[in-house]
Length: 210
Image 1 (cartoon, rainbow, N blue to C red):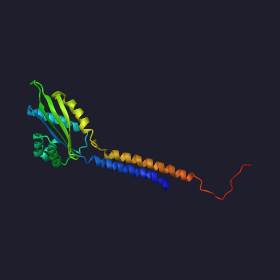
Image 2: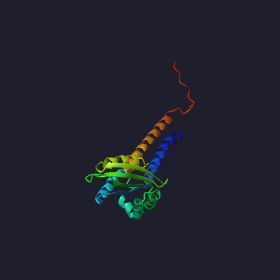
Image 3: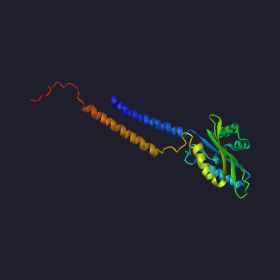
Image 4: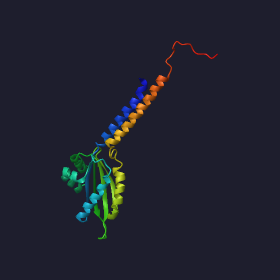
C-alpha cells in the first residue's frame, strides 16, 4: 500500500494545482476606462483609445472589461476620473465595475506643429486592493504610440499575476491524462518490484553446487 501512495499523491496534487491556477486566472478583473486627450479632434481621441486597448490582447477575456463595458457600468465615475485624476476617483470606477485593476490615460497635444500630434501625459494602472496607482509618463509623436503601447503592455499589464489566457479544457485534459498514465506506469513498476522480491524463508533447502 505504501508503494501506491506516492504516485497517487502526485496525481492528486497536480489536479489541485491546476484547479487553483484556473481559479486564480478568473478572479482578477481588469477594467479599461479609456483615455482623454486635449487639443485634438474627437476622432484622434477615439482612435488613440482603441490603440491603447490593444495592450490587453492576450488577457483572459473572462478577466477583461473593455471600454464599452466599463462605460455601461460606470460612465459618470469615468467622467469624474478624467475631471480629476485621483485615487478616490479611480476607486469609484473600480467599485462600480467590480475590478481590481483600472487602466486609464490622460494626455494633451503639445506639438507646436499643427501637422503633427505630440502626445504628452500619463497612463495609469490603479490597484483597488492596495488603493494606489502606478503612473507611466508619455511623450511621443502620435504615429509612434503603437511602439509606446507595446512598452506599456510589458510594464503595466504583463506584470499583473494571472493575466494570460487559461489553458483550454482539452489542454488540461491532455495534461491530466499524461499525469495519470505516468502515475499508472510508476505503480506498475512498483508492483513488479514487489512481486519480484523474495517472500522470505520458504522452508526449502538452499541449493548447493557439488
